Image 1 (cartoon, one colour):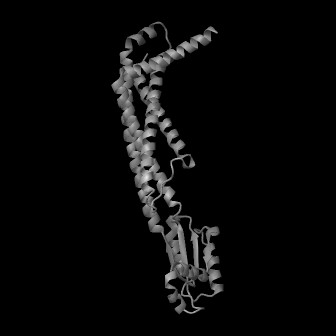
Image 2 (tube, rainbow, N blue to C red):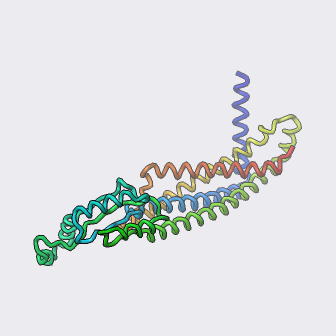
Image 3 (cartoon, rainbow, N blue to C red):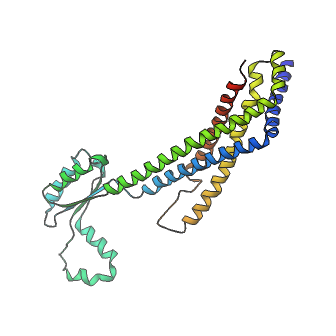
Length: 303
């Protein structure tokens, strides 16, 4: 019973010392929280930007290729073209789909209903559209050789793909990720530096008390725990504020962009996106606080 009371009193003492230190060094605490919050907000914004780029690309099928057969190709030749397409190494075999020219014609009639006279002029059996194969390829780096191989097939008139667009979008994504990483590294270093100075002030203000605790035999764990809790508190509070700012900013942008149908953003509550953002903020914030505290304590609490 006595040990339980002692543990409870020790824990309450450690927590109280951590929060007293936060308020004692108010300006540095505010600076630490502000810088770390900025770091987390920038990190979250870039991460959500990359997420939404991928979210919009899901419907584009950029790794899609279209093969147009000759309009004079008979059914046997069209079937042979499909078989040879499926044999290509860079083709996703189960994605190969034949769109018959009759289907294409009907789709065009539906699309251009106001110009039915033009279709009627072609005659009942006349169809200027070709049979078409649509499929996905695996490796964007090998798409040029695949396109060349398909264009040389007998009965193939033309091959279209979006490889250039896919490469452009990949380059944009990689550029965003590169900038995001540099921003993250710079702001992370600044955050750790500010936290180090905050803990340094806390150590300095309690130096006499620390000397007395050492003198009476207090363990290193007992001395350093309040400072570690202080770093964790800074990280956790910064994470909560950053999440609130990110939530407001994202929903403001979402409500604005949702008015334009060409661009779509994922809902903040979709697929637990909010939970991923919050979890990432808490982990990065708390780890940053602990790292800043550890570096400061190593320098200023040497036995």
